[in-house]
Amino acid sequence: MGKLEGKVAIVTGAGSGMGRATSILYAKEGAKVVLAEFNEVSLNETLEEIKSTGGHAVAIKTDVSKEADVEAMIKKALDEFGKLDILANVAGIADDLTSIENYTNELFERVMAVNVNGPFYASRAAVKVFKEQESGGTIINVSSIAGFLGARGGAAYTMSKHALIGLTRHIASFYGRNNGKIRANAIAPGSIITGMTKKDPSHIDKIGMEAFSDLGPFNSGVPEDIATSALFLASDDSKFINGEVLTVDSAWTVR
Ligand SMILES: NC(=O)c1ccc[n+]([C@@H]2O[C@H](COP(=O)([O-])OP(=O)(O)OC[C@H]3O[C@@H](n4cnc5c(N)ncnc54)[C@H](O)[C@@H]3O)[C@@H](O)[C@H]2O)c1
Image (cartoon, rainbow, N blue to C red; front, side, top):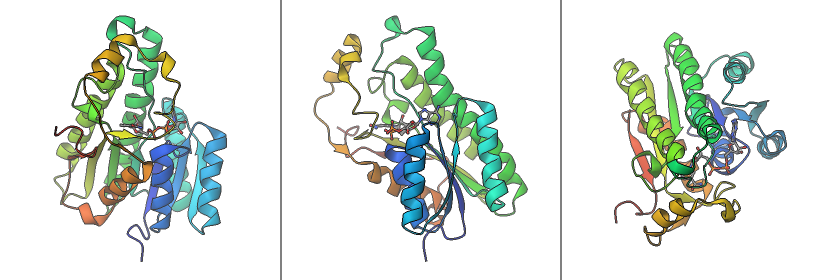
């Protein structure tokens, strides 16, 4: 029996990288998965891949920065499967290590809208569902080591990933007291090779690159390295873990 047998999960950013790997692993472990993603092509690729291996999934085109889209995403889980057990907030965008002096309002607003407003809208709706259910539910927020360090992203990326850790701790401390039926944990990946890291480096901010280069060499992982942690935090194996940040970075931040 899979570790998520009988569970219903939503995964945002399901079309690429960690969101895709997490969706596939959740389905393999028996969950019914709602795939949420704003790129329709990659969304359908993940859907087809899960279906071809006999997994259960449905897809909904979602821009997590839009509250109405996020509400529709939660409704999709309830309409299709009658409940929601797991919300994995994985969708996010990077900011080319942009230094504050070079930050435009447009970029700031976009990064915060996707990386903070999205998980905020989704977590608010999910917590309401979890409260109604006897079984509760669990949230996994994909933050970053930029969520507690300064030179792993630009200004708003760093701010946004710090904010996600705050959201995680808020939910765990306000709603976790009832035998931990409602849980929220964060994952802080180090460097993972995905669509995000494969971007054209010519746009990277010069000041940001200088700060980043000072950090020295590090190991890079693959999306599946994060999916396995997202599975652990979604499953009952972690039922006594609430409000934690799991760093998955192959020792980058302990040096
Ligand atoms: N790759 C890394 O090294 C790294 C390190 C630490 C944290 N992270 C975080 O991991 C998460 C996943 O990133 P990834 O590396 O897999 O990147 P990725 O670019 O491969 O995947 C992100 C997915 O999110 C989707 N997305 C972007 N904006 C969206 C929106 N508004 N609504 C819905 N979907 C949207 C993209 O289309 C894409 O499919 C992000 O939150 C990122 O900040 C990445």
